[in-house]
Image (cartoon, rainbow, N blue to C red; front, side, top):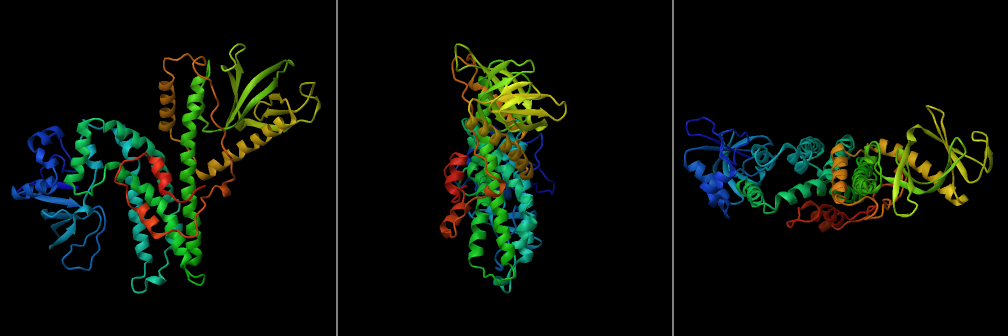
Length: 498
């Protein structure tokens, strides 16, 4: 992250290298036209050295701590400002900090986000939120976590270090990675759309070159937090393997290992829900005459579906297709001629309902003889809804599904499992675009989204191998140099499965 100070001591923003930016900054296009050589290989050193040669003072803000015992290297903390005196070398620059001049790694001063924020003509606030998510929150959290680890590290006798407690104390903080991973597919989509235009490809490459970032695309850098959160369980598993039970940190490391598996589990659950809401949105769009709020307003997964006979207060029988989602039960009617068409008929709030199993025989509420029946009773209005299945086994599946729905809602609350409003809106928007110009029901069958496999919360952990080769750990730590679909990369990089 570079800023330019003029020779007379005043600070002057310079295009593409200034963090603060101003209305007087050159546009990106102006910079390219004036100095297209900056975008060529080696242009990064040229740009910095030309600023220095012209009498400007060029400063860089450190993004990470650099600890060194070598007198020829410059030590600094994240956030320190370093004056760049010479930048001819690709990997090491010569700079000054606190009256000391020495070499420092160029890759420790870098950044994309601030450059993007400065170019408001190229990026909207919404686009930046989509691309970068909460990466700044992750950065702040990781800085604090690193300091905690450093305090627990025993420099004189490293084998006596006790770091397990650091993971346990910061367990809740790691949950922010879930939001980032949740956002990442949308980031890849947004980037892919922008990269179709040459000016964006050149812009991101110029940022990388000018700020001495290693030779991978921006999506590779954005993948790094995902790889980081995958790496922790692997490292803790290895550490636990080589820690004796007599060691003072053994119990904490074991607990930390379980805690980080829970974090990975939460990420996987969010991934599964994101895949689910897209299918549910497409399902809703296919229903004729949908009324009221979108299904995604309250629900994120289909738990069970099937035909039931609904008995009205007047004793009339209505054959309906029912779809049980978390929090609500939706009823639809089939078309008499086209059985692949469904018409919306209503919904029940499952949060307000109490499930009652009925034996075969006469029901006192409806004064009717029923078979394979159960009812839902409203806790607020005492209204009764009576349902009959065709077979006993169908009824049993519905009773189990209703129990699963309640358990799933409770587990999601305990895990803090929520889908953002933006993601819900995006899913509905994409579904509506897909169905644009088509007559609902006639051009496609309103097939229900697949049912979700329901597991108790204590069974939702990732199965970790007892031993993971070290090269796999390194593989997780390094961003891939070729762009790839996020979840394909995530699944390929992650050696543990549900």
